[in-house]
Figure: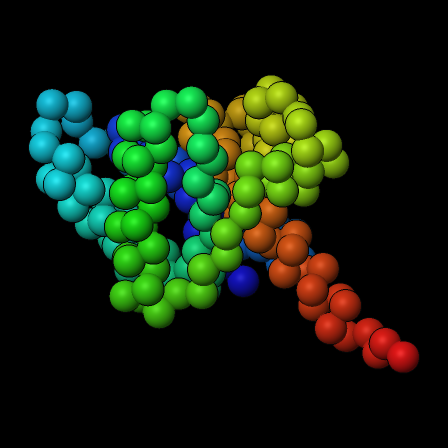
Length: 166
């Protein structure tokens, strides 16, 4: 099962492709950056094309994406929402199943603690994927954490699906 994890953003979108079952392995990861000062519509098109290219090249089975987290900055939340929209469009056009996870669900799945610090998430991503170092920037680490959460969730559902309940 190949999973494309995404931490959406307009300035930088983290992505991580993981072969997920039974033991997760990182295939590729990085950050997709769009230049400041370019019209928003152009930046969104650039993001859409980059994500579509990754989907075509690496053929994931599932796209896992972090749900929108509302903070105090509404403008930032709107930009992230627009980025999520073009990413979801790329997934839909490719016929990918989409799984969405809250930041709390991701932290809980990866570290065992829903309020874990960024450093804890980075440490666990590094350990779970047997990486030499914590991926940078944080958006990339978060994308890999989203992919790991998806892999763990799918593995758990498969186990439960194999059990007969009375």
